[in-house]
Amino acid sequence: MNEPEKQVQKLIRLKRFEEPRDGYFVDFLEEFRSRRNEGETSKGFLNSRVSGGVDNRKWFIGAGIAYAALLVVVLMWPNGPEAKQDSSRQPVIFEPKQPIRNSLTPPKVPISIPRP
Image (tube, rainbow, N blue to C red; front, side):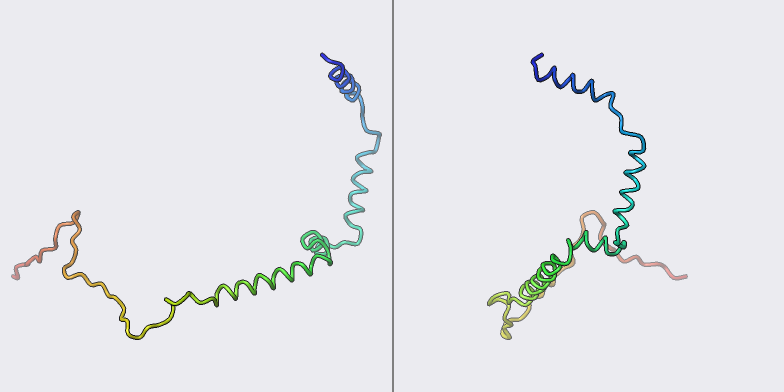
């Protein structure tokens, strides 16, 4: 082993015996709760986390307006010259001359039922 690896192993052996002071976890929990409740309601807390604060709200409003304007432009954009209606053209209607039979089903044959 080289020298840096020996130093790391020695440090790990020393750290194994370290323990936090008495009351550390209780103090941590109390400090956490006090910071969480420092005048922030749940709605204010969520709003500040989502919007990033009051300063960033203007960016969200601007982005929403830009998105709405882009959507209007895309929906109102003409489809080109083929989109114009030509009254001389008639729609094409496809109607087969004979019914198409499926190869898996037998043809329908009228069945005559004798009357009594």
